[in-house]
Image (cartoon, rainbow, N blue to C red):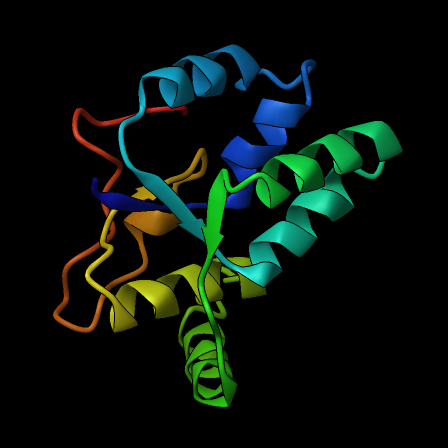
Length: 141
């Protein structure tokens, strides 16, 4: 079962029925075979952007609690790498959630990311490659 990183956008869309990507994300996840990996910064961003509804936040957190996502460990060395990435991509700008996912990709064999924004087309892995949407490509844009 392959692992895939997941950014905050698809998670927000999944729990916000009014989001323009809601139906596509829901459909994608119904057919997805694998495990979804994310980070605490992504979870924090999702909860912040779902702050219009405590019920949506709680539904999301309970979904995570039931094992829908694997939360990658980040240590102080990861923070150093995240700071370096934020500095490198300051003109984008790269936020902490995105930086945390790129660091996880650098330190694991997980090089696919489900995202609804184009930032991950810009970010590069240590070998110069980029994170890719799962195959077949998921184009939420």
